[in-house]
Length: 364
Image (cartoon, rainbow, N blue to C red; front, side, top):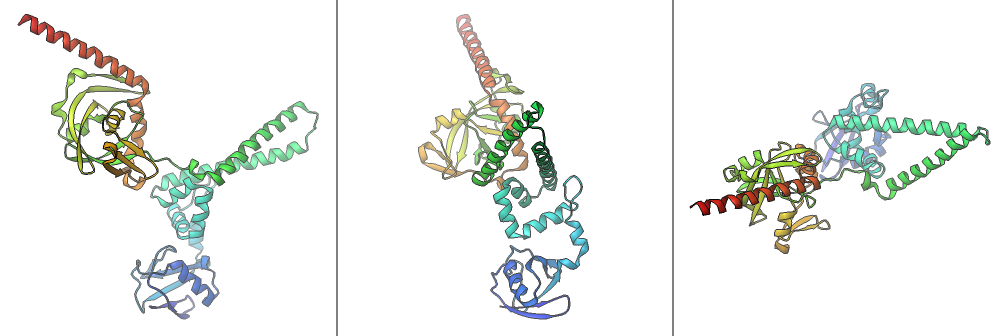
């Protein structure tokens, strides 16, 4: 298809492009025609800026449509918006984020050098972006101070004991910094956020996102979630107690059996019910063992029933943000101290129940 591009000086340029061409490639063609570098070009369609990674068809550009081209160099306000505050944060974080997102080469370099920051640029949390920018600015400041101190040590008296200690500390820190740089190059994933394992399930017909945790001894459901699933009426309060671990949660009781649906198959499951508003549903080791589950990280799936069902683990974008804070609460509920205290309490409750039943049978 053909599109018409009008420049600021009212120059008319006709381009023959593919509908699925990216805006960045169109800018490359215009760079040849206008001598304006790709980085300085800003293309507008219907008054809206066109991102470098976007395709013409996705933006609604059709045959014989008009596109405006302006130069970023002429927009001082835009340049000011991309500046930084003294603490390293962006003056206009939204504009700065959009600018980085539109530069595919910069994003590629950022993913290689700082995957965590690159992920934040692709997200919607501007507060987190500002925090990371300030943190990186602080790290650069520390590095500059260290380099200045190293230069001073080169001029220090080699027989000064204190100077020798500082040189030794500088050599040790240099080794740490080299190790960090090597990790950034060869193992950048180590600096990115590790997303925990969640799968889609149905509990008593109610869909929810289950946190799969092989480190938790028991499968846990919160009181609110059990009520939403219509299971609170089955709560056996004879198994009440207190879960003591990193934190403390009240054990309201136990639901002995209820149907859960994984994939297209139903499985019986039992739950410990906690009074914990910060944790919804945790699929623990007891049910993982019972239903012969396999956590397959190569294919990124949870296999159930020895492999008869395979459900994919959710991507970070599919996990509600509030769930990302649940992991620490789930660890409080499933720590070793918790498991031992829960087990001891349940054994005592079970023995008391048996004694009561024997007494009732004797009296009758």
